[in-house]
Image (tube, rainbow, N blue to C red; front, side, top):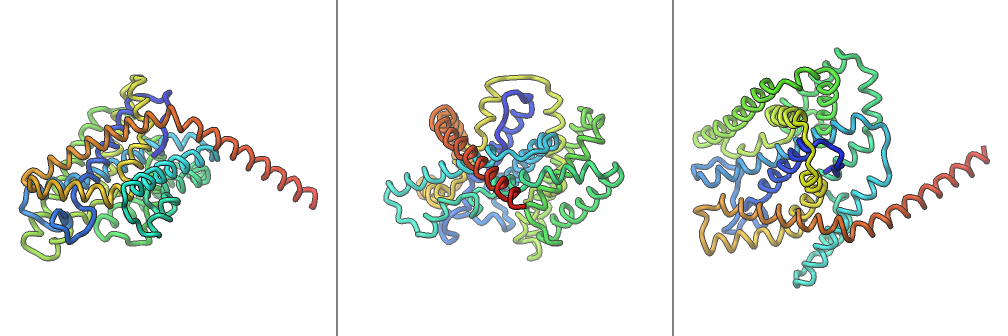
Length: 372
């Protein structure tokens, strides 16, 4: 997740806080851990249980949140043509710090962790423990080249690229999944090009409140309807029985419309609030804390096992929301503490490393230039 700047409009920053809450809610359902445990719930199958159906909706909220975050990030990246080494290093060290903190905590609590799990905690981004962060970094590294391509295209050419992208990597992915060599990075690039067209050629439309409210309402109802229809069909045919999460991807066209319309509405909300901006600046930390691999694999299943054995799952959706609220608030508080304490020292070390690497690179280039 992209670190916020206090100079940004608080409307967008508030949207990012809401998006993070949606992501946390999606990760707070009992579908982690041992699939054979009594407390585990298979959310991929059609159900007549209202609580399970609510949990399925919770999972979709996560993809809505992911898409909103990406839309917010691409809007600002289109204005930048340089890759900042410090920013990349900051992001990697933040993820590493929290990953190793969890490793230390779980080790002190007596957990016997597999060697490979321990190793992966040292490389959380590389091993996709934080898949969004890793994919975002790849997009950030190539975004100057994407900007050059976008500027070289006329409006009609850019529109054509987007229409092809939507057909292959939004509509087709919703129906067929992982077709046409789709990857998450391809999805990120699709959103990047969509934002480029929206920002450069749909300025007036993007400012129309009524239009965006209509798009948001219709796309939300369409997504809800799709889930409900799939669930009903799953009661009668095997074809749809295990398809409840089939459409749960951030490039789902309805999710894209929800994200873009929400962004356009919040972008036009011209307010500045220091508290909102400050809280939004630690959304990255909320993400890496609540979705840490060890926490998701060991702590979250333990929570739901206790709930299942003590209270049953009569109100499991409420218990999931309670866990989400705890994780969200805890992540926010821990993130703010980290920002004003250890992060200061860590970033100083990163700055020295960046300076040293810059000197080494310049010296190396100087040596090779002399050889020529």
